[in-house]
Image (cartoon, helix red, strand yellow):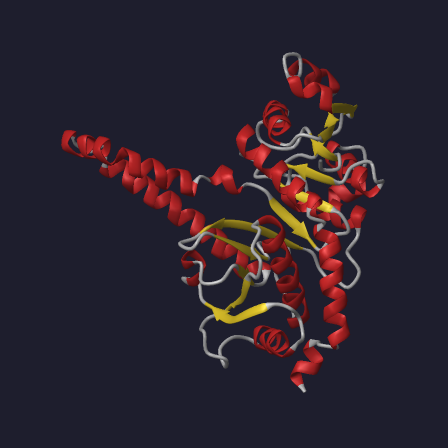
Length: 347
């Protein structure tokens, strides 16, 4: 039997909240026995949605009238949003009332509130956004996906440690390989931060399988299990991959619908195409982790559906059950004991 877990939810965050949130909780209730939920939001809107839901027995609703808008500035939320559904859901983790928080709301605001309320793990300079997605070899974790535009070598090494533990925790990989995203695989390529980070990862005593540098086309190939980069490059790479997938999906749709013969061809290839669709299903990979915080915070895509939101809850449950933050602390302690740093690597 696994220990009971409580997840706090920003019930008003997301394009289709709160209906999508409540339906997602219903799916998660069936998937994850022993998990209970505290939903922060408008009680008058939430309670009727649970009327025919079996999940109500595992849920508590905490009322608040305030909501963080999708276009709200993070600085504004930090000043005036302390009674919002997002803030209260994050604060539940800080108070120990919940083991993790999931929100489909404003990404920038959620990061700012989470960093302010939960604080950072000891030894971590900056948080990062980590997520996983399909590749030729299976699934790959990538971070940072947009939290930090500028990073130094020590930040990248911290991301490597956190990403490696994420891959072991969520993907179940025994010894994941780690690569630094660069403009080439040669040792002399890249900026100072990337080269210094590589020197630290090669020379340190960390129990990390460091592959070396990887390029953009190595991401979909699955050359490594963890791709580490700064938030500027990571966000661009992520959006480029997402755009390419949508583009080719439209091309396939148009190709199979432009004539009667093409439609017959679709019927013949339908089973294989459905397998491809299932492999690339975005909802399956919904749920980005804010790693480096002193608490579990998961960001769901704002436009997801109930299945996708349930998957984001699943990411939080996995991280909590596997003791993700405790593992991070252990790895960082081992890293600190080596005395490795960007300054040392530069000497």
